[in-house]
Length: 253
Image (cartoon, rainbow, N blue to C red; front, side, top):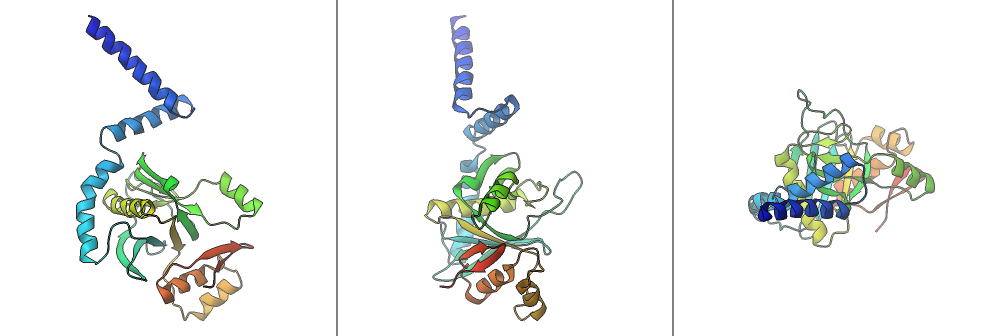
């Protein structure tokens, strides 16, 4: 009897301690956060995924003469439904893997893509215990002007989701998002400050005079993005980009 009573009191105490360690949220939010913590403790979090996926991933990297933790660059092409993972070699970046978006399928909610533009991924953007299996939040590049900062704070940031879910974002199969997540995570842990992500409508012909003219006269959704695309195509090094007056500008080296 005493053992049962002790176990009951311990369970209540553990629950109360878990609640106090969580930031204040409404009750449903608390249960979601608690479930995520239990999931991680039970071995379903990032460590479990890393231990399962890393051996094969390291073998693929070795065959490509690349190493885990090397800087990462991501390009996305909405029309072609492709996500490209580029890794830095000796000096320039090399295409390591290309994965496709999930197709709309039955009750899956993947109905849109992230908007065209330049984004970054930081440590805070990696969500290992997401309802979407894994989640990678994309932070838009802004000019830093008050109106840009205010607009960014009000908008829901786009993301890369697993489970083939996520309206208005990039939805991937779990087997595709797992190595992407690990490559980004290890690169950030190894010292990369942020992972650049460039989202385009489609691959461009760098000699396309019409595309260049449209971009120059800002008759496109993301003015200056054509310059961002061509800068990487010519150098195979992700360009330094800033945004001013609503236009992306490639910094000169």
